[in-house]
Image 1: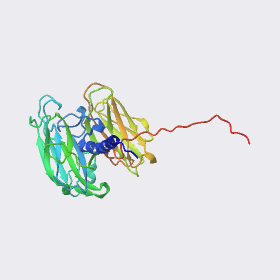
Image 2: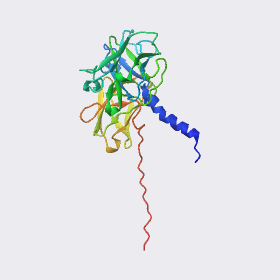
Image 3: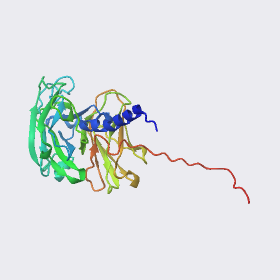
Image 4: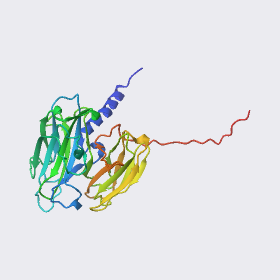
Length: 326
């Protein structure tokens, strides 16, 4: 059999693409330009409910080489960030590993309360206005993979990154990337990123679509989807192999909205696709999180486990032909 080498290259690129996207938060697959965290003196109506964000990175236990956390536009000032009068905000980026950095219940909460800073602090940086970091990548590291918490069900070492808004009332827009190099974004094969709450900036383009990929484990029976400060800026729909755009209730300015959606057997152990279709040509910062029927937070994956979910159409063909007689 003759093998088309060009086809093989395309397949390999598609396969590797998920690993590349998995290193960046938000990922290209999500269609979300930036995460956003405001200073702790901000008004919640600007789109941040708690001025803190937590992102987890899972690294295969077979990976032993040091890595770096890279941050794009880590400072609070300049073109991308959101000023409120004058720049007065500082943001702290902290990397945690060790026992209970992930497994602690508070670490996976959607609120920065209790022991959410569990584990061992590996490194941190606090940044305010800093031209050297404005619209540039900076790095934290090197970090040894063995410093993470070994989580058997994820078959890897997990690290926690906490982004806290300290003093001030401005909004910080930024991206994260897990890299094997300090000066380049070189992904780690097999790594992935996930979070239990997302504070994000949507694209400022009408009809643009953002994606969030929540994972339904084998026990979940329903999703309770909540949004904060959506500003009635379009529609949110839920897609999966059996859901073809179930409408999700959204929120208005400085308010929470929620709706409950049953999870079917065919959707378990897969990621679903929460699609946010924007209405306005303006900036919009907002918060999303999902809990199961026991009010336990559900993880969002930067690269959806099992790939982007596709609705499976059912085609019923009826025949009007009469059966032949004997």
